[in-house]
Length: 333
View: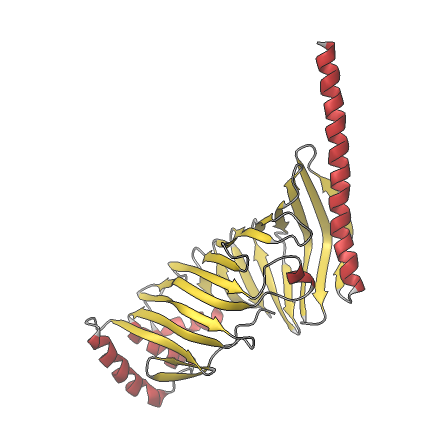
């Protein structure tokens, strides 16, 4: 029995020593990364570091943390951020974010993010590059405001990004329960009293191939840029309004997409009224557009459902026969 106790004490001391050494290594790696970013001209600050989690986990918390990249004008700050990993393998990280307001800025525009239980689970491939195999970002109630104006909110948020057979390819899924648009979009609801405050459905399922893998260089150097987008399904249901989209886009080095996206819209006449109320569709264009789309809807057999195609060509986008203007540039800053 004494021998068993001695063995147990020896193993406990050995494990405690490993935990302390590994914890110190994790702390040094995190704080060293911040110091390296400062050497590159970033703002990379924190007030202090806390270590916890013994004996099965390593938990490292940075308080009063702030990051700012002067090159692309992005900045983020929060009261704290926490890194948690199993003591046996630090490549499976859980990042937990403060429930207090976080600030995300792009040059002179700043958004305030409030989120309950916001965390990101990261599975990283062993190696110096820390290549991302899978990320699962989840949150409870969340909201985004800018200059005191509500931009968006929801009861939950889920984003999953998982590496495919090609290292540069990722399957991406996004969903949000009770997504509530901001005040600008809510103002459009006055044109359709039947629309509720929140969306019933907001889901996205696609595969994206980037020009390089997602690894630590995505923070330290530049973001991977999309080159091929295979949209399996995007679905939005807002009261009686329903939108479905599927298709494929190729994206060049300037971020200009080329391809087709098939769109199905139910109760599309309310959408025209909303676009007109928002000023996106002039009064004089309402009748011609309605007649043209009514003709197209009639060809499909259901006058309340409209099947069209978004065509991306030569830097422009058209909805069926209707030109919409320059195509958006798909560039991750």
